[in-house]
Structures are given as C-alpha cells and as structure tokens.
Amino acid sequence: MSTNFTINMATLLSEIKIAVVDELKSAMISKIQTAISYEIRSLLAEFRVDNGRRQEAEVATGRCLDQLELRVEQLEQRLSVAPVVRSEDKERKPNTCVVVPNLPSIHLEDRPSSEVGVKMVGGGISLPSIDLLTSREE
View 1 (spheres, one colour):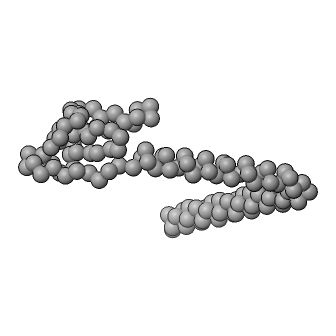
View 2 (cartoon, helix red, strand yellow; view 1 turned 30 degrees about the horizontal axis):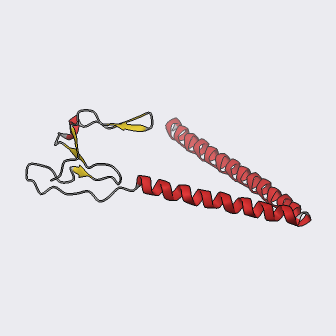
View 3 (cartoon, helix red, strand yellow; view 1 turned 60 degrees about the horizontal axis):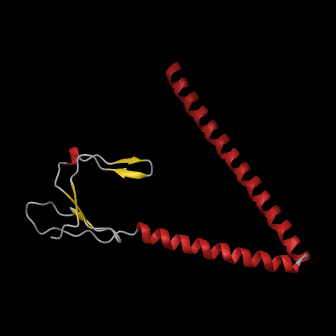
C-alpha cells in the first residue's frame, strides 16, 4: 500500500512541477510581449513626432534588410552542394564523388564506414583515414 502511495505522490509532484513550469513560461512570455509592445509604441510615438527621423530610420532599415538578404544569398551559394555524382564503376560504391561548386571534385576512396570518422574541428571538418584525390575525372 505504501508503494502505491509513493508512486502516486511522485506522479503528483511531477504534475505539479510541470504545471508550475508551464505557468512560469506563460508569465515570462506575457512579460516579454508586454515589453516588446511598449517598445514598439514608444518607437511609433517618436516617429510621429519627428517625421525626418522616421524617413532616416526607414532608409537605414532598408539598407540593413538589403545587406541581410545579400548575406543570406551568399551563404546559400556557399552552402549549396551539387548533386552527388554516382560512379558506374563496380569496384566503387555509389555516392563516392562529391562535387562542391567552386572547388575541384573530391573522390573518397572506398573505406569501411568504421574507418571513416568525421569530426568538427575549429569550424572545419576533419576526415581521418580517408585518401582524397583531387581533380580526378571518371
């Protein structure tokens, strides 16, 4: 009987904890929304008072958005990877040739997956135990 009571008490405490966390999250979200709406209202009041300043802010915001769009496009181009070239060679596994725009083709020699370890190192990728042969055409 004490076991059932303990399990029910643990369940009850868990439910109370979840309810308290949910209530805290709701309160924090409400405070954040209130602070944001206050800031927006104060900015709008400033813009109504000083129309010249409003135009300057709109131009600066437009420039920032243009720069952001340009940076996003540049990142998309740098991160885009061409489709994987499939090897017709029976000795090679499919998907062994990876083509990256603006870089030479990189061919990975066949290795068991246990030998291929991929690690992130200082923002780059380290591929130990792989022979890389660049600029090789199939």
